[in-house]
Length: 254
Length: 379
Image 1 (cartoon, helix red, strand yellow):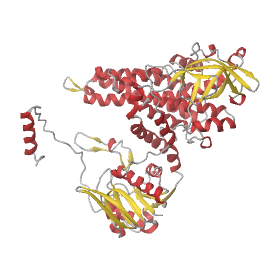
Image 2 (cartoon, rainbow over the protein chains, first blue to last red):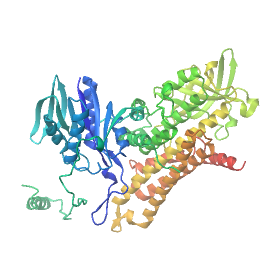
Image 3 (cartoon, each protein chain N blue to C red):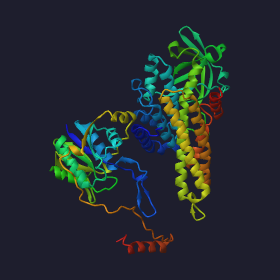
Image 4 (spheres, chains in turn green, yellow):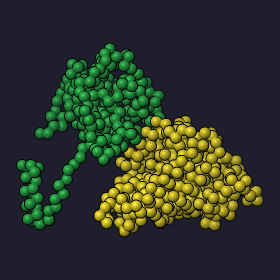
């Protein structure tokens, strides 16, 4: 019966980000949500538990105010949570998050399998999962769209460009999952109300053995803008021909 | 003053939004068109404990507060107000009547399966000749041995054709006036009770509405809810609760009208720019957003007062009246913003417009709400 850790991130809901005229991002009236792929990760962990038994512990690194995120995650089925929180844990970059998770997991949590989302909804750096596996010295399988446990190994289907890659890895292992893996459940009323009654292990910066310096420096952040050429083509033979030629000239068609 | 929801209330509103987008939006137009009761949807609602939110866990509910129930009815109604209303009347009136007035036995027998969403409640008060004038009702209940015998005709019964537990109001002592009416729980299949055909309505079409006929319908004495003669007061208390739900339903309609109007006005180009940048249209949208917030403050206050154990009859009437009239006003504007495209079947605003009207009529007309409010402030 596996002990599963699932990592999740409480992120800014991009639907609330406004763009100023200069392209600057306005975060003043944002709301937060569970990072999209992390919902799939939680669902995958909970389904494995429903099949094989064991436990699911949801782990997150964030600021102390992110209690709603904890409840949201716990309402989706994990048994307990580990809340690594500090006022300074805002805007962490992936190497810091991975290092913090490594120390927390090594020091406090039992596990056979760790599940992460492939990337976060905000930065989508796809770094935390692989870095964490590396630091823990366990195998990492990324882009997982199907996952099962077979004795003391996992069988994971990877969604890759050329097709599907089926891998086996000895436990303990880490997987990062893509949305194709499942359709996350929508918590019911009682699931949400019971979430705050579940155990939460709180870990603060003072409890950790190191300080975690960033390796990157964010210079600026602006909204993506799409330049449009606004060329129209008639819907006849000549127009279609011209359209194809234009796409080829732009390098869209090769 | 604290305008903040609890984290649970925020999460539940968000979860209901997701639930409605996944399960209600895809069928809302179809169940309206076909006047169909979506039994499969109500099974899903029951599975998620959405059918008995403010009912204590020991009676099959979720054990949350009334404000959460209102938020959920609002989000559900934003997708389909027929569905939102069915949940509202089931919880706000049927379940609440047993919770507030039922004995332990009745709570176990009738409330628990309803709060779990296994059985649907129906509120059977209105008669062909007794709408706002409830005292003009003629249905009677006569004690005969261990049974009450019900005779009469009821109409506009929501969940009439689809209900499981009917809360029927009848005179046990007509001479006693306001203290002469009683309430009975009549389970589906009781001989002598018959539901009529589902009415074809202007809006709210998937909510099932019919006449209810009672001919020598024998109901055991233990199905008398509350005290004999207390029925009218219980019905009014039921309305107080139900009206918060109708306010929430109306708010869901306004939110949907606003959603549609924002989306459309940004896409629709006339005179060389999106109509959202024409002042005439932008101001309609501003008014819509303002009344939506005003209605929310009224409705959430009423629900909050209910949760605090305060008297909220006037506040519920104000919330229901304001939100219903705002729903009618702004769905009219939403159709106007859409122009001809909003007048065509398939446009969501067309359905919203038809659905809005009933909120000014049922669970007390707008005129009845003004009677309640003026009765409170003039005394």
